Image 1 (cartoon, rainbow, N blue to C red):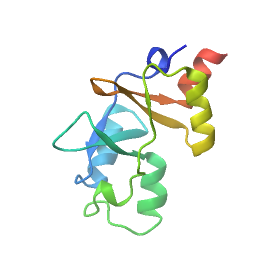
Image 2 (tube, rainbow, N blue to C red):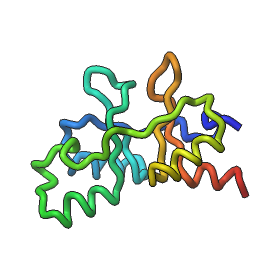
Image 3 (cartoon, rainbow, N blue to C red):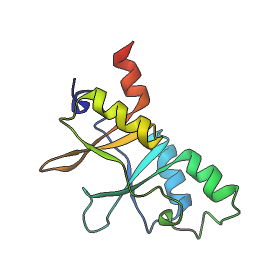
Image 4 (cartoon, helix red, strand yellow):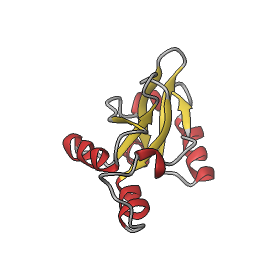
Length: 126
């Protein structure tokens, strides 16, 4: 089964120059724990990822001001991405090697196509 068939197709995004507070508000508004960070001039080109854990550990615990600090200061980059046609098993292997629970899914012609999480994989594996 391809990752494109099981990934979340609705993805909340942000740009790296937005504040961490704005990222947290967007996560709350969309009821998600992850934002894909995209280029402001190319909203389909992922450049990083930020999670609610990043907000906690890399911002709050580090003493950064969420009203003043840009997302780019704490986001994970480079982003780990996979083609939407990739078999799920290959994506799981990439997750294991890279130590991540989320992969950005891209289409050959469309750029950002979705977000694959470990929960998505477990949902079809059980």
